[in-house]
Length: 190
Image (cartoon, rainbow, N blue to C red):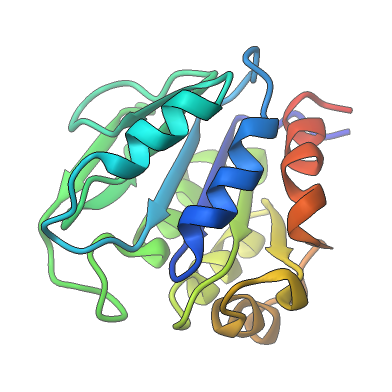
């Protein structure tokens, strides 16, 4: 099995519930960083991060500019900032223009991570109400990474998974209730 070095997850409408199902299934010893864009209001507080911290074995935190992406840590893009990964594996936050009406944008994170991690990247698109993530997932596939989409029938809002499936011949389509364990197995090399 491939040796993955990072995982990126994109989620929007319905994401609070979906992440609450998936992330608690990840093991504390996860050997890679997980970077997440959840579309949020620009004035959101830390409720999502606090909620996930209480339920997860892995460390969950808001991403900070210039910090290194460490294994076993889940980084969430802060409200109103794009999250990117730099060539030296550090995180970058940007106030560049919105992409797909969103900041943070899933496509921005996915494209930057694809170019850094190449075949060592797992890209995941989950529930959401727009097409953000479809282009980024295609870029991950072009760079040799593994593509995963939440089974649309298990998404609270299936527009984002359907857009990803239309854009990419994905490697795996996984129902929400099995997605966390599946990602954990991929990350652990099983």
